[in-house]
Structure formats: structure tokens, C-alpha cells
Image (cartoon, rainbow, N blue to C red; front, top):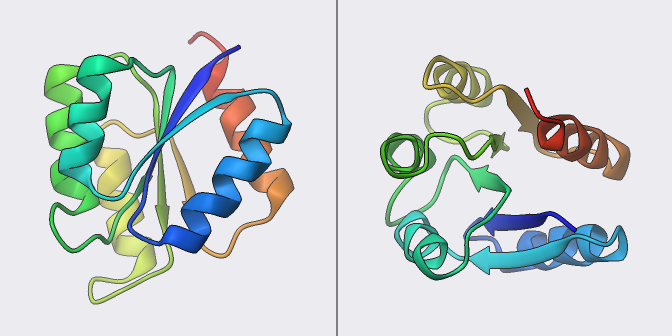
Length: 123
């Protein structure tokens, strides 16, 4: 089964995403910020990354840049609930950095699973 790395500083959302994806049969890994997510990938490769855009240590845009350099083929789904730069703008910028799918928080279980399934289909 495909493996998914969730990178999000919100413990409760990370836990909810983990439970939802695990119930669908995915192998799920977690990291609370971008730097930890990058280190996690060194020891445990992932087939897909769910990435929050607003985190305190290393934000999503910076993390996308590093992920693209180190792991250019791993698909990323960018997630955002807004913040100082605004949901639409940061998700738009994420797409310009090579992210094909974005999810604006809050999103439904179905929206999450549809995005995950779509990104795991070879392109």
C-alpha cells in the first residue's frame, strides 16, 4: 500500500488525517514541521506528502522548495486554512512551485481521499 507523509504543526489535524488515511489502508507517517518531514524522508520514503503551508519553523513554501530539490518526483498536496498571507495566494504560489493539488481547510473526508487517490495515480 502507498505511504503518505503528513507534515503539519496542528497535532489534532495531523491525528485526524492519520486516522482517516490509515482506515483506508495507507501507511501513514507524520512530522510536525518541514525540517522534520525532510529528515523523515531520508529514512522512510513516501509516495505522497500532505503539507501544511503555515508552520512556525519552516513554512510550506520553503519546504516545497527543499522537497522539489531533494525528492522531485514525490507528489505534494498543499493544505492551508489561511493565515497572514491568505489561503488563495499561498496555495496559488504552491501550484507555481509544482504542486498539482491543493486543499483549502476545512476540507471534507471525501475531498481529502479524492485528492490522495488522484495524486497516487502515475502521471
